[in-house]
Length: 255
Image (tube, rainbow, N blue to C red; front, side):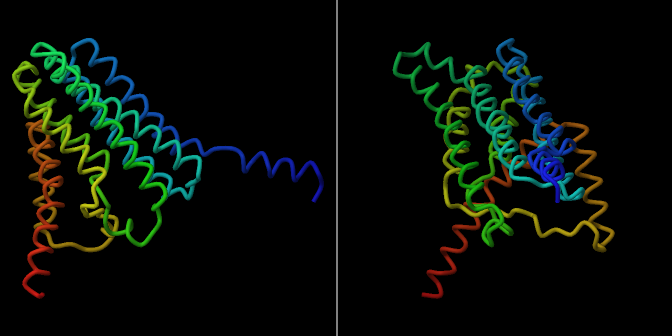
């Protein structure tokens, strides 16, 4: 092989795949836009932007696998985009919508507000870092250790979106927002197991009732997306601790 050909191969290896990284850029853009909307007091728009980020985050991995364009660059870029959207932007939204009102009570309470938002953001960073080093392992194929950062954002931002959509002032919800912020952060860095749904085969045959259930869920989301999506992420977030309690009970009975 000539020097020119080897140089071309080297450049090709150093290049990046365009299509999946466009979706990842969409995730990053949606998270950044959510921050802009939050600073302007448009909390519903900010919440919707985070859910758009979830959609593009789901698509970039699927597109990469379908087109065989997975790369180390894409993995790292995806994690950075997730940190912005599901960590920083989501924590910032919780703070601007509700937690900053704690400063009206005392300086200590005000510090608690932004520290809770920071804890959530740092937990998302730690969750993503742990996921990167365990990616592809046997554990992460069927289950997630800790609540995935998009699901944590769905839990926290879904509540804010639903509340803002009702026109509720965030200062009146400071206790539940504070509790959700801390709980979502703690679940991300916990060892609680969550179903990954990676073993689902969408190409296999399923009973007809499954299609009917999917249709009902789709209609419900279209009618009231904020409340239905929040409810779905709440059920998923609770499923991990509930299953952990069941496993502990079974071990105690068998001991």
